[in-house]
Length: 296
Length: 185
Image 1 (tube, rainbow over the protein chains, first blue to last red):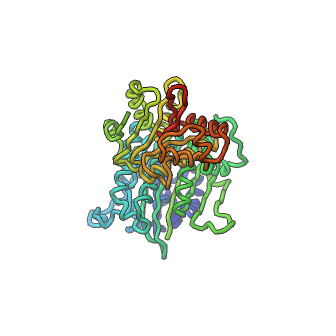
Image 2: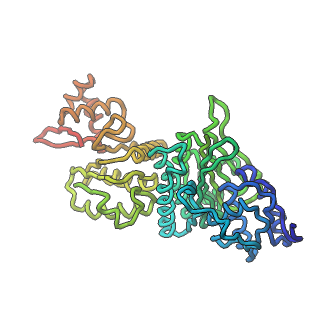
Image 3: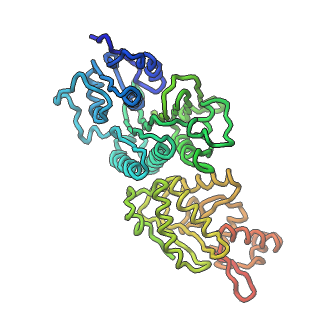
């Protein structure tokens, strides 16, 4: 039974596009009356939405000094969040705990994931965290990339993880999170890597850089992804190299920053058809959130 | 001079088998610079990447690109050669060089000890420049007239090509008496 001060979240945690519905509820969240997020409607949660929820809670805690509570979490979602170390981040108060007998096993069979990993905003700590996440990824790559396994593809993902995570401490002025999961959704096999922060975002990071002209926030995100512009140096390779790797893998990349997003779907690239989509005017959500997927 | 990265990099505790991030690239560059005090003018610096797979673009920018520019110093030039480069490292190096050239209009090329996609270099060389690399690999030395004959171009054009390639440190230039000869890195 939802309590008076709870906000019922929609069943919109199955991909980055659906999750916009949740982000659209931020105004209500900050109305001053919400204490609890009711997750009873959730049937599924994937890594981008999971980290989005974590950032939502962390932003709330930073902005108000108070933790939100989570309630009515369906068992399967609760088990998954527990398995991904979601609750270890201590961002939310828990109204109900998961009984130990329902814990998902941390067996070799459940190694098709990388648990939520903190990416700190201090250089030295961050390098240690990136190295640690890559070491875990390499150990589990056979399970994570089972449909795409090859030495080269594993190495491509190492490059992607390293470059995107470095952007967190170099550009966002904030810490962030990484997570990865191979899963089935309907008839599709998906492997998704998510690296997100709630820092200053791409637009703010380029604010002091002269000579960068763009007509909308989404255009700037697209420039950051497809060209070698850099906010700190004469030019940067990170995101453009990530983009070319995703193209080689025929995957897709979704980047959201503040109120704009860009999706590039190389998996749907055929002939001259558009495979890159820009969106402006989204609900403001601080930082940069990136989701990279291979679908088969 | 041979520098085995697996001898100096472990002190930085990077994730074996990867050399990643800017700070690791910067630190390794500093350590290599200490050794470079002892390199002779015109000597080859062989960087051996045995055991490493991924060199990410940030590392390449801070380590390899800086060494390439250092090697181009007129005062104390040397030649960089890469050994035991993995497939992904070669792909990332080529991609970073391409991006660098697109922005700065400065070509970056580095010689490799073994064949990478049928070439003994990574980077963008014109067909005639590739032919010169291959000619020198087989014949070991050449003077401009040899190259002119081989490529069926005039000697002045051959001299220009060889001079340009030496500026990029893709071929070595030696002086024997009054004769300038060229040989592979």
